[in-house]
Length: 168
Image: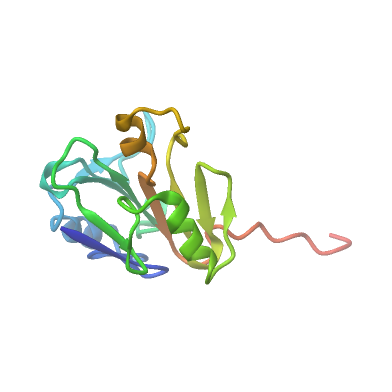
């Protein structure tokens, strides 16, 4: 399965800004979505897909607005074959993270901290929990060389908050 990321627009069949019910229906292309609450006691206003045959876990965040605000996809290491998650033609879960950053930096301003990076212009964030060192075993290199999660949002998601005007 290939999941195409259309920055600022969609992740596969899920459209940013679409109503929550439509997003739940669109997610059926990847598996059976379940209602999701981000923390205990919260209302389940989001959707979640866990593994299944798609090779990904995903959370569609709608929150109290009732529309899709962000889509977060996580690589499912235990499912074979793994889904391809394509951003500008790159499979961000198979291509080494350093190469993904290099290609993105050729076209966009990037904020990077080693483990993750954001592309504010595209409202996209990519992450992994650790960066393997030279002495890492094969399993660690396989698991952590590539990004293992991507967050896609609408315009301005990674923009800094506006500064108050002087005198206010």
